Amino acid sequence: MLFRADAGPRPAVGDPGDTDPPPAVLVEDVTVHYGAVHALDRASLTLAPGRVCGLVGMNGSGKSTLFKTVMGLVRPDSGRVEIDGLSPQQARRRGVVGYVPQSEDVDWAFPVSVRDVVMMGRYGRQNLVRRATAADRAAVDEALERVELTALADRQIGALSGGQRKRAFVARGIAQQASVLLLDEPFAGVDKRSEATISRLLRELAADPDAPRTVLVSTHDLHGLPQLCDEAVLLMRKVLMHGPPETVLRPEPLALAFGLDVLSDHRGPDPADDREDGR
Amino acid sequence: MTVWEWLAEPWSYDFMIRATVTTVVAAALCALLSCWLVLIGWSLMGDAVSHAVLPGVVLAYVVGAPFALGALIFGLIAVTLIGAVRSTSRVKEDAAIGIVFTTLFALGLVLISVTPSQTDLNHILFGNLLGVGDEDVLQVLVLAVLAGAILLVKRRDLTLFAFDPTHAHAIGLSPRRLSALLLGLLALTSVVALQAVGVVLVVAMLIIPGATAYLLTDRFGRMLLISPIIAVACSVIGIVASFWLDASSGAMVVLTQGIVYALVHLFAPRRGLISTASARRRRTRATAAATAGVGTATQPLR
Image 1 (cartoon, rainbow over the protein chains, first blue to last red):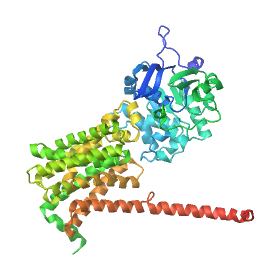
Image 2: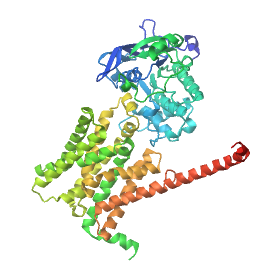
Image 3: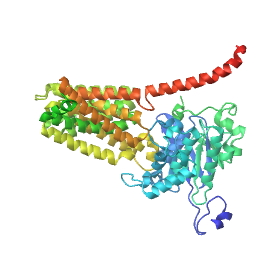
Image 4: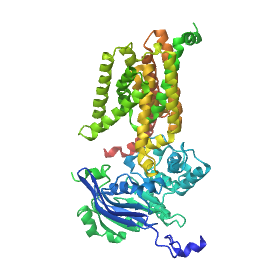
C-alpha cells in the first residue's frame, strides 16, 4: 500500500515488457436497430480502467441501448464490443459488469431485504442452489459497509430512501467484484445530498488502488457532472464528443445534442427511453 | 357431535383419504409456484397455461401417453403462440394470451366431445376428487415431488429472475431459460392440480395462496412457507366442509382460499385494510391537532 502512493489513483501497468492493459470498455463502430428504429449508429467509445465517465444525451439518444450492448443484452448489427479484453459473453460469465438499474425498472415492493439484494451479486460465483458460503457473507458485509448501509441491511428494499436504494445496488456490484459498473440514471428522484454521497462513493470505487472500477453513468444531471466524472460522452445515436467534462459540457456541444435551451429545460428520464426514438 | 368427530369422520372413508392427499399435495405445489407468479405478474399466464394444457391431456389420454407429457407440449405451444401473436401483430399481450388460451381450451373441449371415452367432461372441468384412484394419487405424488424439488433447488435463481432479470443476465444466468423453466413447471403443476379442482379452478390455486402470503410478509423465504401452509389448511378445511355440506369439493377448497384471502386483506397486521385505515386515521388526527393549533392563530387571515 505504502509504496503505491506515488503510482497515483490509476492502476499501474504491469511488467515493463507488457503491452498496455486492454481498455475496460471498448465499443467500436457499433450499430443497433430495433426494427425500423435506428438506436445506435456506428458508435465508438473507449474507456481506460479506473475512469468515471458520464454518458449524456437526450431521451432516445441510445444511452440505454449502449448499456444493453455492453452487457450483451442487445447484439449489435455490426461493430465490436469488448470488456476488459473479453467478449460480452465471457465478461458476463465472469461477472465483470455490474449494473444499477433505473428506479422505474425495479419492483420496490418485492419481498427482499437489502442484504438479499446485495447477495444476488454473489450468485454467479455460487453452486447450483446458490448456497451462501462464509466468503459470500463476508463479501456482502464488506460491500454493505462500503456503501454505509450496514444498519439498514435487514430492511425491505423499498423501505429505503431513493439515494439509499441506489447505494444498495452499487453494493451488489461491489459484492459481485465487478470491475465495470453501469449506472442508468442514478440521480433521478434523488435529493442533492444523496447525489453528492453517491458521487463520492463512485469516485472512491474508481480510485480504489486494490480494485479500480470503471464507472459509466448515464445522467440528465449536467450540473453535477464535473464533480463526478473524469470524462464525459455526448451521445446522439453516435458519439458526438468524448472528453473532459468541462469541454463536453460547454453550451455549443450541448446544443448539438439536446437542442438550444438545454440548461433551462432538461427533461426528466423517460422509462421508454430508446423506444420513443424516431416517432 | 364434537368438533373432533366432525373433523375425523370423513377420514373413515378410503376415497376421502385419497381425495385429501391429492388435494393437499396439489395445493402445496400450486402455492409454491404462485409465490413467483404473483411477484412476476404472471397470474394471467397461469390462467392461460392451465387452460391451454387441456388438448394435450386429452390427446395423451387417446394415445395412452402420460398426461404430463401432453400438458408440457401444449403448455409450450401456448407460450410460443402467445409470444408469436404479440410480436407479429399490434395486439397487446393480454389480448394475445386471451386469444391463444381460449382457442386451445376450446380445442380441448372439442377433442373431449369427439373422443369415445369414459372421461366425463365435468370431471376435467371441475375435478373429480372423489373418483381419484390409487394410480392417480401415485402420479400426482411423483409429479408434485419432482416439480417441487426443482422449484426449491432453483428458488434463488427464480427469485432473482423475478426481481431483476437484467442482473441475472449480467452475471451469466439465462433469464430466457429461467422463464422457460418456470413455464414448464407451470404446465406440470396444472396437470397435478387438474385432478383435484379441475381446469377451471386451477388458476385460483395458482394465484390466491401466493397473493395471501405476499400481504403477510416482506421476506420471500417466508412467503415460500406461508403460502403452502395456507393452501394446505384451506384444502383440508374445504374438503371436510364439502363432505358435510355435500358440496363440490374442488370448489369448496377454492372458496376457502378466497375467504382466507379476504380475511388477510382486511385484517393483516401491517398491510390489511383495517390497520392501514386506522394508521391513516391516527396520522390525520395528529395532523389535524397540529394544524388546529396553527389554525387559531391564522384565523383572522381567512
